[in-house]
Length: 129
Image 1 (cartoon, rainbow, N blue to C red):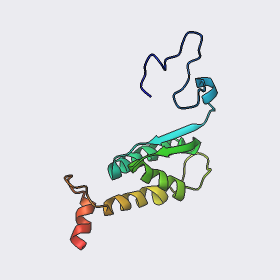
Image 2 (image 1 turned 60 degrees about the horizontal axis):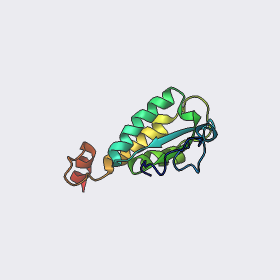
Image 3 (image 1 turned 135 degrees about the horizontal axis):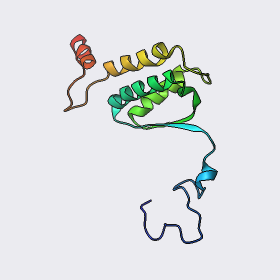
Image 4 (image 1 turned 180 degrees about the vertical axis):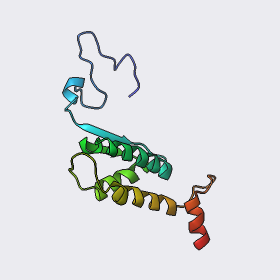
């Protein structure tokens, strides 16, 4: 909702978080760690793979309670949901085998977007077809 004089807090009103039904920031903070993955097709999915691999190395992926995603982020989120055995502590040992390799294989088999340069994987797929 755009900010206007109608939706700004009035004197004496508590400041609330947008669409969280009027919860104050302290009421909305339940201590849960969330991960938001944005979109842009396979390019975003591969970006998220690198970021998630680093978060896993640091032991932070294990602390995530909720994942929200759109478009390419949904591809990475689907692999997290289906290929990682939750819950786990520390780092996920089979990360590369269970998440990294499947996502790279999926992205390399994807057709290139029109007007965008083809990826090396897309060229290999089109030569075999």
